Amino acid sequence: RFEQTVANIYRYEDILESHESMSMVIQDELGKIKKEYQAKRKTVIDNRENAVYEEKPVEEIDVAFIMDRFGYAKTIDATTYERNKETIQAEFKYSFVMKNTGKICLFTSAGNLHTIKAMDLPQGKMRDKGVPIDNVSNYNASDETVILVASQSELNLYRLIFTTKSSMMKTVDGGEFDVSKRTVAATKLTDGDELVNVEVLKEQKTVILRTEDGYFLRFPVDTIPEKKKTAVGVRGMRLGKNDFVRDVYYLNDLEEKTVEHNNKKLELAHLKITSRDTKGTKVRI
Image 1 (spheres, rainbow, N blue to C red):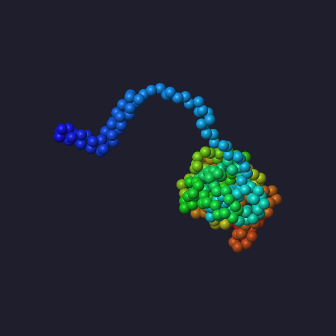
Image 2 (cartoon, helix red, strand yellow):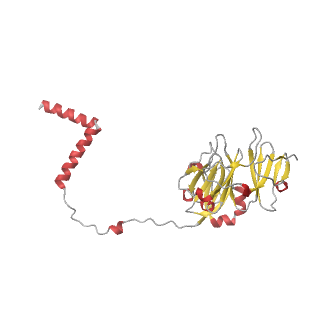
Image 3 (spheres, rainbow, N blue to C red):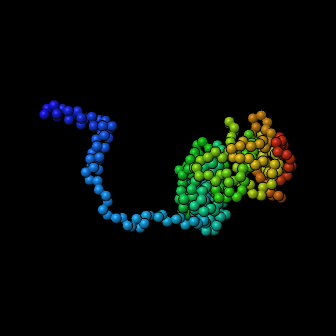
């Protein structure tokens, strides 16, 4: 009996210390139970259809997405937005009407596209703070800067113009950004380059590139070729050594737009329309 007790102790310790031994014991016990109690079901389940839970589809409605310059975002009632449109556009950096079932697209300086479901954002009042977009997307404010925010459904209707710091440009069909992933590459960047502007192409006729050294170049938008989002693009402007594109502006026909340059006002429409891939003019006013 003593020898049997010692053997049992050894066996029990092995079961407690070894996951494999414990699994074998459980399998053996379940096998015995199955063999002893196996029997066909004697009751009939005849209410299976009633037991199926069907989630009620979300009612599709218009909402307004608004985000301030600090990256706090929310949605509000579309009627409230229309009633306070001027105030909202003055106080918030990004705002537009979209469907509550849609997605918001964030294009960043790092060349990324982050998507956010409208339903992942809190819907509240105009004065509510909202939530940081970092909390509801893969966007990281410490590594990248938001360049453009737009509704994914709107992008499907237009083309986008991309401009990088090193003056690489292209247009891309907006349908290429109708993606299911939370984050994808919006464009291809060369080493050390970054996006400075992404624009939804609607009625713009000319584009003006402004460099850090004070050069301006104005040329027709239709000279920028359409490429895939995976392409680098073409050169928009010839840059001097250590110079880079700082700002990008767009003009429609007969549109007036002024910018501050050397502490004075510069009327962009007065700039001569020239050709893409030239050096531009150093404006002195």
